[in-house]
Image 1: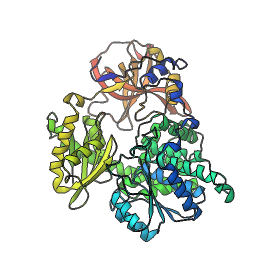
Image 2: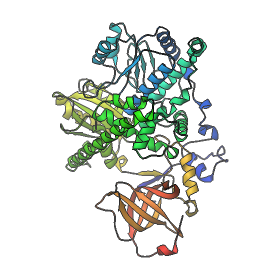
Image 3: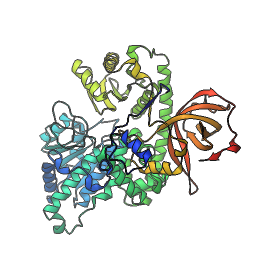
Image 4: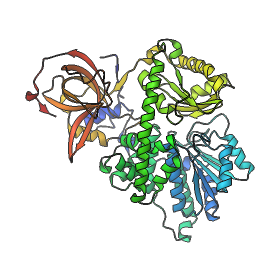
Length: 590
């Protein structure tokens, strides 16, 4: 087997999967699924909100705020998870009868991330809140919470990021990752956490007879699941069973034409049909357009789009978000090429390059995370890209690889060098930090040293994890549709991918940089369409008839109300040149 390929290991005991198609048995067994219960996607099997630490205290305080019609302020974040979290909080509280709900999203270029003392002061000046609720942030904002406490404002933190050794002195904290929290699903995104908080609040209010007293229909929380699904997928949290339920149920609403106007408008400008939506479409089409607001301007605009009450209001906003996304792409392309230029001059075989830091003072703060991601994908090693925060400080955004928890890396560096980093936070695969400009070179060394402790040179070799080869009879549209419906697939629950030897019968460029192919699997008597996006134009199209090894997914091509099987090619390399084999006229389409 090619050393670039690693086949996923399947569990031996698949007795609980006997009712599934043999191909699904193989795929689920490689994802540690033991029985059909592990795949149950009904809302009744969601983990209970009652397991979250301090959830009762939060529900009681929020109910008090509603009964007194206190001024509630939601403090969000400038990414898609933060935006959707804000929308869930605002929509739910208003549906519960709150008359004084406002929100604020710190502009990344002025205030940075989270509940800072400066944001508290802005909030007091503009909204005069009695209660602040953070969504997708707050667990690391000790100073901001202290400032609110000093002003007599209660703070409820809802977050999912990993906490530091000490917690802020908030009125209450709901975060499944805080110490001693018994909630089983530690992978909730910020939007999942606030959704659970609102479930608990609805239950508390219902027990108090609040909805009958106010003549308010008891809100149906499933109407928020499309927003929950979007934020969960966008934040690339692991899709454990609980998150798969949330995403699946949200997609069900979207496919049924029940998406909120904002998401419907974002799908329209993304050229996505509701009935065909899968989790990847949320992550690669809808979320980037929403994120463009926070990257280039102000996420408050994206939130306003999601809060729009009708499609005619949402569509112009979505069109503007699409324009921002096009601008973001252009900026990212330039920065990516500049980053590639930097790494061309590095000794990538040296231990000091196992973890990379890249910096250009002209780079855009809102796009450095995407550059770090592109370089990480190219070199298969942790990368932090830095931009100029101000005249004295830098701001970095990091991306990691499997097996290296980048937030823990930053914590270790901070312990060893307490004065090096100003602040940091994040997840296993993504993190952010700030540091004084003069500390950059010292941080570079500390980062590469720490990564070298956690990775070996062999770990840097790019490998593709697949579910093995498909039999020729398994190349069917029915199987592609079955796999599409068997998810949702995503981080921690990867979509099925396969590998094998193919012969390229035809190849041409479409859309300037995408390679459209007609392929024949070795030993097959039929052929199948394939497409590879964003190919290396210096190598493809290659007009010789090539034998290639492909890593691919079974995909469904929707065109003019027709469905057709195609292979979505993720990677390809030439194995040999050949003029032999059957002609296209002798073959049949799969």
